[in-house]
Image (cartoon, rainbow, N blue to C red; front, side, top):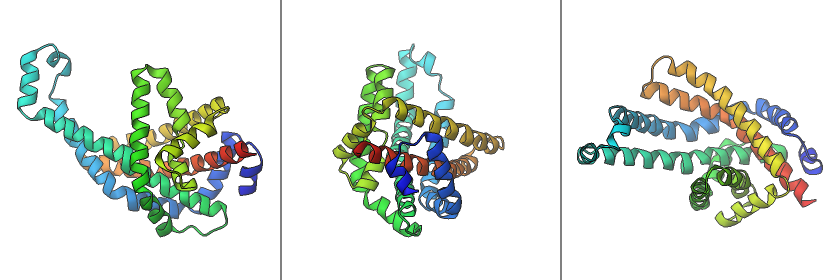
Length: 258
């Protein structure tokens, strides 16, 4: 399987087929990674997002922006501080902690492709060891994407495609924060349409599948427990797509280097 990734350019559907073979044979190991790392993160996420919704639900932001007194009340009552604190925590979780699951899944995927036994502990430790590299890289990535949105939507979409693989460059090629972004861009250069279509296909399928399960659990009520369960289920589903993304990265890198 690794030889095929190294020696020929594969479509995203071929890669997903290969990823499914790897995934189904090691599904419990992938799920274990998602749960071990994800459970504490999802618990915090569920609590903070519920707090955020509780604070913002009673605020009419449209009318508030038109009324200085309402803005003053919003700030003086502590709601502004609560909103900013919740936003900061959610940003940290999404930008810095959830990617740890991605790193561990990618590490395990490469091990399996190279004929090594899936080792949950080894992959999780490898992901956490890359934390000091991941944090500045994730911050740089977010700054670049935000800068793209400030330049309107199209630059942000281009930057998202260019730099999407920085996490995989960190864990699979031991790159530094800056070099991981540069390697991701170099891999995407000359393959922009293929990479963009591949990532879009993965996103649509992941969003659709995760959305189905999320709606099922949320139908029982939007509360901390349901948010927690829904987030854990999403992590389990995402492990397949992170496995496929790791294989896409390897295929792009090997073909590019030929």
